[in-house]
Length: 149
Image 1 (cartoon, rainbow, N blue to C red):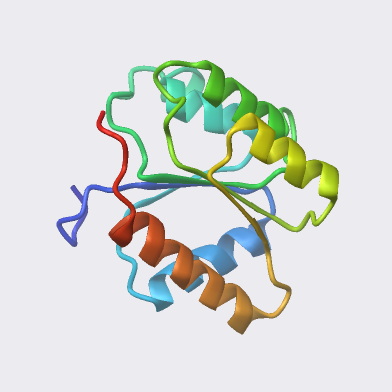
Image 2: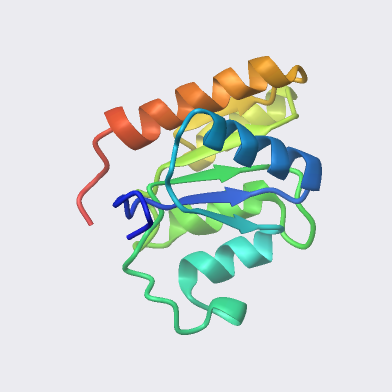
């Protein structure tokens, strides 16, 4: 449990340090006090979720409340991460929000066909980005009823 008494973790999968900083700043600005775990590429995200690699031994029964997944990632891209998570019984119901700069129709269609819960194009303007993060946090962390574990 974190300092605010909330044990609902956000997994942010983002390789761009500026976008990572903006997302964390926006979450904190809107007093979303959940612990934020950052994975900087697809391999690190899968290692965290499946308790392998640098996260070997992590209690994988403790799932994040939501995964914020960029698509353009090194080593393993976001679409492949999404595919692997949906293929696995342990993670197939995990809420996954694609948070990306890509507005390509193919990325949108593929993300939804692979089972993402939401697809959000990152606004360029910080105030719009901040508002998008606030709404995302309010919905996925406060309003949404997650599937039973």
